[in-house]
Length: 469
Ligand SMILES: [Zn+2]
Image 1 (tube, rainbow, N blue to C red):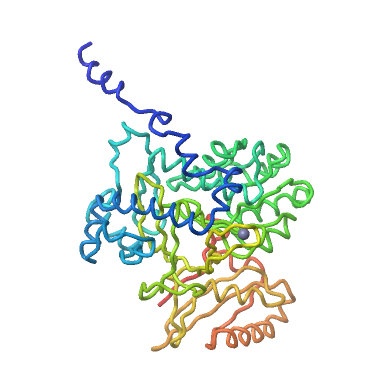
Image 2 (image 1 turned 90 degrees about the vertical axis):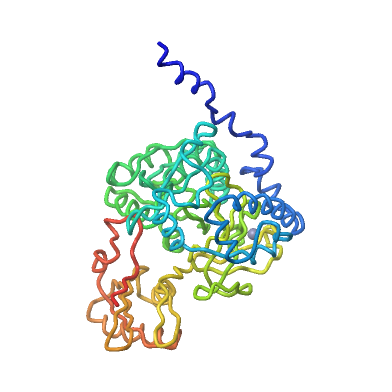
């Protein structure tokens, strides 16, 4: 028996989720939906800034103890005491995913950017999720119980705005794997929106036809998955003799995809949103559909030049830099995620909120192609091309080097008679030349011809770009 003594003694010290997190305190700091929309969502600019400054000061001190930040800040000659106003945030250096990768290489396997180590799980339950596993070494992010709950609460705010309501049945068709996506939706729906989740995972786990049947049988109000997969579900529903608008009772589209196509297919209003792995859900559109309101009690969003890192004025497109204000596990302090967007100037929205608004996701900053001196983003080119009459919302951009100059081609899909492809191609090239001031090759193909490039049926996220230089 003596050999058990140590184990038993240790077990007595374990901290459970409900002891590790003071949930009343958590809800006072971060109002959950629906209360949120009658409380901090309507805060005045002064109230917003005062909450941000208080949380930012705590965050800068927390991050200063983490080697990754401490060393970078020392090099830049700044420290936690230099932060006296929210504006001072700009004095601190940004970092990108490359810096995180280097941190992992230098300090395997977790990097030196985490604020916790696995053994901390004895004093507060923790999880670790990975991102980027498909294109290189996985990047781990540790989440404390507090981080999981606040993150889920923020996600639930976005889902509520998008139309999901307590008591709804919701299908969760995200892939359960290394990434936290599926878990984030699950936690938000079950813990912070009181929804009943049917866990289907992807079409490989529960066939698409079965997902259609489940959604109809249980009257699901939403299906959490990619926009592309949701459209496949609609196709499968039609093949089974259903009308997606009538037989599927969707009331919300928490799916990242083409707003018009999704809205049209399901007859449901679409609200854009924005978030990413390391920080969870950052912003969501309101009924005014004029920018995405940032949850400013939990985030500060800035926009910088994708090449130089210089902060940009409101309205200018650049790379999104996020500082989260709530996490106790892995802090993110001026993380340049390299997603492109812009900021609206602060002003009161039609919905009554003063929360800062950002533009929708407008592509990846690291996909930027310099074509004869003009900065182009494949997603931006795709958006213009797909708006041309007779072109489907599906495209693939390639860049290659011809002698000493770069060339770009966009392939798009048309359902017209292939005999007309030639004239569609010329029209498209003229539109692109007019819009971007540089020659971009266009190619028009029949539906399905791009699927192997976009990996529509094999990957959870459609590929839109290949650099062949
Ligand atoms: Zn609004």
